[in-house]
Each structure stands twice: as C-alpha cells, then as structure tokens.
Length: 210
Length: 138
Image (cartoon, rainbow over all chains, first blue to last red; front, side, top):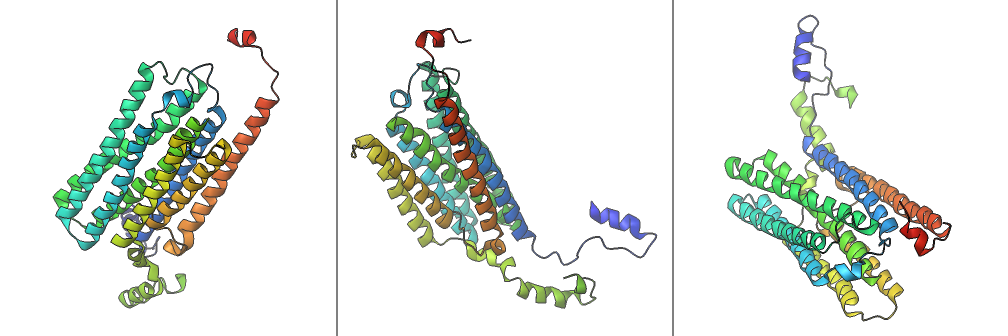
C-alpha cells in the first residue's frame, strides 16, 4: 500500500521516503504485538473473573458448586490441557530442528488433546443444562458459563488455527512465515493454559470449597 | 538512527545495525529446550495435583487455609508456565514484553480487588430482605 503511494508520488519529485528502509526486525515486532494482544485478552478474562468473584456466591436458592461440579472430570480436563501444552512444546522443538513430519505429528497430538478438552467441557455443560443448572438458573451459573464458555471459545478458535497451520505447514513446509505463525499460536495456546489454571483454582476448587 | 537513515552504503549499515541489535535474532534464544519443557511440565503436574488433592480429600480442616493454599499454588503455577512455556524473561524484546505484562498485572489487580471490594460493601450495606420479599422480587 505505502509502496504504491511512494511510487505514484515519486513521478513528480525525486522519490521522497516516508519510511525507514532498514526495517530489519519484523519478526520481533510480530511477537511483541501478539504479546500485547494476549495481554488485552488477559484483561477480558480478568473482568470475567471479577464478575464471577462478585456473583459466584449468588445461587438464587439453586444448586451450589459443591452440588454441581465433578472434580475428577475437571482434573481429567486439566490434564488434557496440560498434555496439549507440553506436546505443543515438543512441536516447537521439532520446528526448530526443521523436522516437518515430526512437527506435524506433535501438532496433531496437541489438536487431539485440545479436542478432548473441548469435548469434556461440552459434555459437562450439556450435563449441567440437563440438570436444570443452565446459565439462566442463577447469577453464579451465568457468570460460570460466561467465564468458562469464553475460555472454551478461545480453545475452539485455537484448534481451528492449529488445523489451518497444519495444512499450511503440510503444503508449504517450515518456511519463515509458518514458523512465525506457529510461534504466535504457541504463545496463544500456552496462554490459554495459564487462564485455565485460574479457572480450575478460582472457579472449581474454590467453588467446591464453599 | 535518522542520522544515517539515507546513507548510500545500505548493506554495510545493515550488518552493523544487526550487530547492534543483538535481540533481532536473539529471540531464537528465547525458545525452550526439551529439558526446560520437561521441568515445566513436571512442576505443573505437581502444582496441579496438590490443590486437587487438598480439596477432594479435605486433608486440611480449615477451609480458609485450604483456599489460601489453592490460590497460592495457582499463582506459583502461573509463574512456572510463564517462565518454562511462555519463556518470559526481563530481556526478551528489550524488556517490552515484561513491561506489558507488569502493566497488565497492575490492571488485573485493580480490576479484581476493586470489583470484589466495592461489591462486597454494596452487599453488606444492602437492606436486609426476608425470604417472602425475595420471592416477590421481579
């Protein structure tokens, strides 16, 4: 865009320069920019956590966390996300070695763990709604579904992104662009795991404690 | 930077500036090794298992102390993830990721503490309601 601008103006005068030509680290700025995005995402979750902190005890004479939450299921869910984090780490290690097939393998394993996490969460939501503990039952359940649902939505988009990148790597190999994208997704994926630590500590465990 | 922005010897300058900004290819060093990933994973497993065990077995009688431990271990695990999985360190991107993180943490602290504080006072200062009044709420 700016390139064409420069050239169309350059016809009359002697090519004025509007930008520094030695723009030598686009890689680094992508990572920093993506980190800033993650930090803003972090604020979204902070607000949802605050909402749950305020409303999490307002049961409206409905079920409490101790009645609803199945901690072994949450523990398995947590394990799924933790496994997916380490397998993504393995994918990154293989990416640095330049091993395309191994990278794709570990990305695939990560996707399977992510899908397992999502499946268990959807099963839990479905179970809760069928028990009559849907998001409309009480303020506690509204904030619970919003917070955990937002996290689940992030994981969903992470999996879509992961599949897209697997296709990209499969077709074009480990070119610098794909490496950059994989590093962004790596940060996104580990960030989701960090948010999940807050969810299982603050929402599930503290909720069951009462 | 602007003083030599228009120099004709661009290639020489570029290599010089590359040497200057060591971090431009220095983010490669920010990646983990197999060892660091495995350490982070083991620590995470331990730090996840302890709070789940505490709550599911009810090993400690005091709920307040259990809650304190659960949140404390959660915070430690977040730091472990930041260091071993997200490779946070004060040097990456010339310190800007750390600055952004600290700023975000301040905002998160204000949001969480402020919300809980204000809403707690609103709740405790509300006019008491009888169950009958509650039932007739709109």
